Image (cartoon, rainbow, N blue to C red; front, side, top):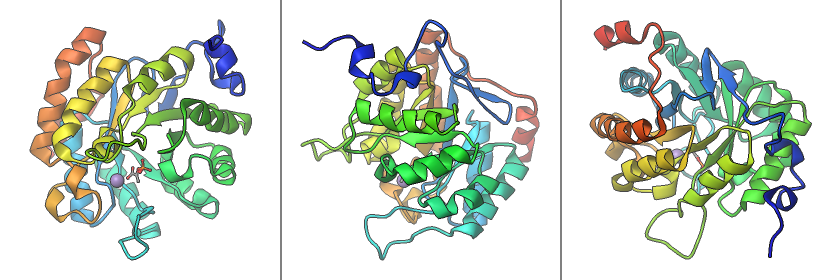
Length: 293
Ligand code: PEP
Ligand code: MN
């Protein structure tokens, strides 16, 4: 028999709930992640063109997302696939923030790139392939930016919590945990969405927990259902891939929602928000944007 959760995750003491610390709220551009409002982060897998990014930013904002995602540095399975626009992609993201008011989350893959990515991004994303890259985690922690830590595709919950602990140890309390699916014997989906991990992380840790149904499913048909499951399981937010024309996307098109599909998914979450007593926040300025788009 196992012991208590506290014993089980004893190597990560500071990420566990305690009587003094029941939850961490990560503040980003006026948003309170983990603070009771459900925060949707949406956007393309890769930053491709100015048009693609701006159109997506405006659309997702109208649909209720508060953070724009998009990769400027892309970890790809093939070394010959598009690797991202790098600095030019970061500049496009910063312009999208200026135009839309959305905060920006983007992946950083190398510790050398941390200062540059931190200059442009509001949240640094650590990808599944780097969850245990401790020198990258240390550099990201020391940047002072909040860190979105994706679960390694072959990492246990204990491994994820250890990586979060390392970021806290390096002086950065603003960590957002992300379940994005793990490798199992099942190959019908790209990964296996570990919904129990969401419930468990919310149970044991004070850190915000979000879910990425896109990389878990690997196909767009399943993304809305996994998103609803994530809300029901207690997630504080979503990270979801959206593209104006998924069939033409430079990466992860199969799992990206088009604009209509994104709107339908968001609408389908409402009864699940209601069950949890949650509402989507409507910050100042959200309405005028509607007239612009
Ligand atoms: C991504 O968010 O586009 C991504 C590469 O995610 P992951 O690291 O979870 O595969
Ligand atoms: Mn992707």
